[in-house]
Length: 434
Image 1 (cartoon, rainbow, N blue to C red):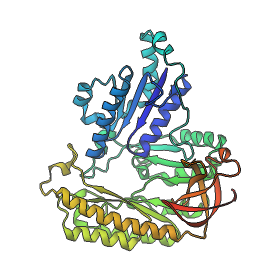
Image 2: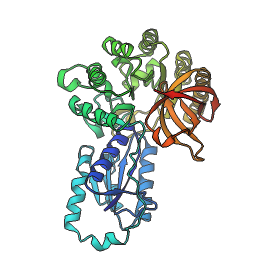
Image 3: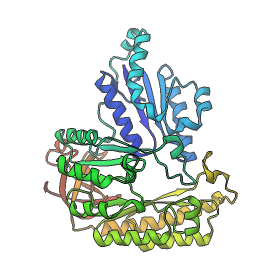
Image 4: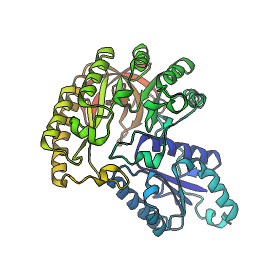
């Protein structure tokens, strides 16, 4: 039986899709491309963080039903919680909540036991397929799920539930398995990983988990996907400072707004002064760290003065990359009921201004790395086959000649001397493998 899987949304979804693929492949199923492989089962792992996310899911469901109208369709992920009528109207065969994603292989086996599939399957025996993981060169490790922060704009606590931390033993086993397969960087991910362990002991234990990974595995580099500013305490900073050679010098810390009034309306657990002071402290302890962030524009009640404050703090901190989002009302959130909505025209204008500033800061950050020797986790070959690319420790895409044995470089960390800017990053020459 062949299956396809499409993933929308966050890194947690990407990790979970990899796990679904791994479990199905381990049960003898083959992963194929939904456009050419004629799958018997199409799986969509969905996102609902914005109205745009919902629209993409609906479009994909309709597209898959049209292209593979004889295939079974299974939909999982956050989208299903608030869109069950749509799923029913569009004849989705299987709907699985987030905590049932691991049941998909069992579900498929049960389908096979109930169906006479030999004739159906035989007509597709020559279909192309791929067993390549979704993020094969920098695999993600899910360490945590759920959120209880309840920001007024966010639906995630409703669709994902409360904090749930993965057992350290399982995390270590997964990482060591990846090391044995030749991978040299892993990305620790979760919905709210700064709260790792809190439901068990009432305190954040990410620093403890990092310590165990560092002492009990041989992974070359660990990257932390995202942290809140109020979760980066002295214990975590001590681990980061003491292991700079094995923890990527890059932190993604969501800001959302530079206006204290808007941060309060958002239900964020800090004000702009606390955020500035936190970044300043981290810079003093971990010089050379790259900071990326999320910023939202057009939140209900956001004035020009509020937006100006956001521009000021973004420029003052000098983030290496901005992810800019326009506020999207989500039914079921408190902000959905707010009255002072900002017009689409104003949101679009503010987004353009902020993106322009973000592009400027990104170029400046990339240019400061020209001439440096960067440690790059090799990811993939570009479309014309002459270059490979990868991600540096401080999160810059770096291109280099695919030489001498590119097939053996994927997932490895190599040293590259950056020579000049190129496309969305830098291009350089390989010095050596680490």
